Image (tube, rainbow, N blue to C red; front, side, top):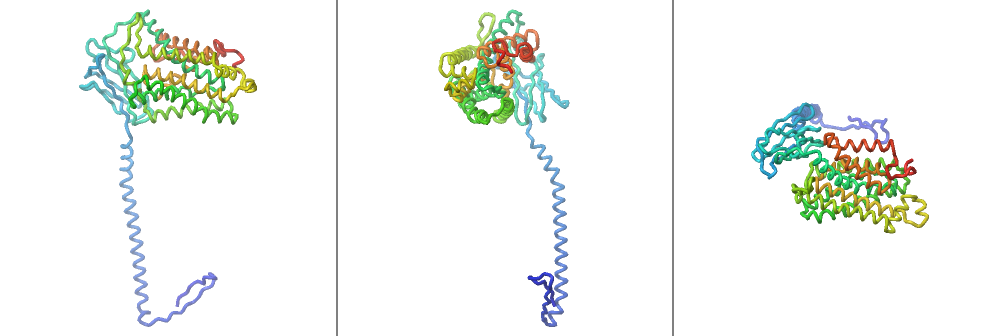
Length: 466
C-alpha cells in the first residue's frame, strides 16, 4: 500500500494498493536498508569533500596574499653621475632618505650608475657626497646637492640628476644679477605667452580656467613624442605640437566642454569648479600615459651656452625666444588690425551689445580659444626645449600665469604682458636673497598684495571687478 497526494487537491490523499508476490515483499526491507546506507555514505562524502576544500583554502589563502603583496611593483630612483665631458664617475656616495625612517646608502658603479628601489609612496631626498668628487670637479650648482623626488604611484621609475662640471669660481654679485635678469626676461616671455591666452579667454568668456596650465603640458608632451619617438626634427615637431595643441586644447575643448556649458547657462563659479576638476583629471592622465620622470629632447640635450659679456645663453634659448616675441607681436596685431580681433575686443567689453551689432559671439569665442591655446602651447614648447617636460610642468607654471594676469589686470592683453615681465624678473632676482626652492613664493606674495592693494591690476579698470 502506498499513499500519494492528489495533484488537483493537495489536501486529499489517494491510497494505491499494489499487489506483490511473497518473494518481492521479503526483499523490500533489504532494498530499503541498502538505500539508507547509500544515502549515509553520500552525506559522509559531502562532509569530507567540504572539509578538504576548507583545508585547501586555509592553506593557500595566506600564500595568495603574500604573492599579491610581492607582485606590487616597486619604484626605482636612479641616475648616472658623469663629469662635464660625459665620463663616468665611479665611487660617488649617494644617500637617500624618505618617509617612515627609510634610509639607503649607495655608491656609483663603474659606469657612474646608481639605483635605489622604493616600495612606498612619499617624498624622498637624494644627496650626493660632494667630497667624493674628483679634484677639479664640482656641482655646477652647489645648492643642488640634494634632489627631491615625489613618488605618487609605484612602478614608475624616477631619474635624478646631479650636474657635475669643472670647479666653479663664485660669481660676483654683478655677474649673478646680470645672468638672473636675462633668465627673468626669458621666464617672463614664457609666462607672457600663456598669460596672454588666459587673459583673452577670460576677457571674452569670463572663465577663470584652472586647466590652462595643462595646455602647456600637452604641447610639451606632443613635442617630446614627435621629436624623441617619431624622430622628427625639433624645428618640425614644435610647429606641429603648436597646431595640434590649438586644435585639441582650443577648438575641441571649447566645442565639446565649454560651449555646451555656456548654452545651459552654467554660472562662472560652477565653470571654474569644472576647470579645476578637468585640470586634475588631465594631470593624472598625463602621469598615467607619460610617467613621472622629466625627459629631455635628445636633439638639444646638453647644448653648450654662448658667453655674451656677463651672461650665458644657449642657442636654443635664443631661437625659441625670438619666435616667442614674433608670436606675441602677431597676436597683438591680430587684436588691433583684423576684423576678428576687433570683434573679440567688442565681445570682451560688452557681449550683449556686440551680439546686437551683428557680431557672431560664439564664433569670436571659438577664435579666441584657438589663439589662446596656440599661445599657451608655444609656451609649453619653449619650456620643453630648454628644460624638459614632465606631467607637472603646467601645474608649476599656473601660479606664475595667474600672478601675471592679476598683476597686469584681468582681461587686458597689455596688462598680461607687463605683469608677466615683472613676475619673471621678480622670481629670478629674488634668488639673490632667498633659496632657489622658495623663488615661486615671491609670485604668491605679489598675487596677494595686488589683490589687497589694487585688485583691478596695473592696467585694469575698476569696473572689471565685482
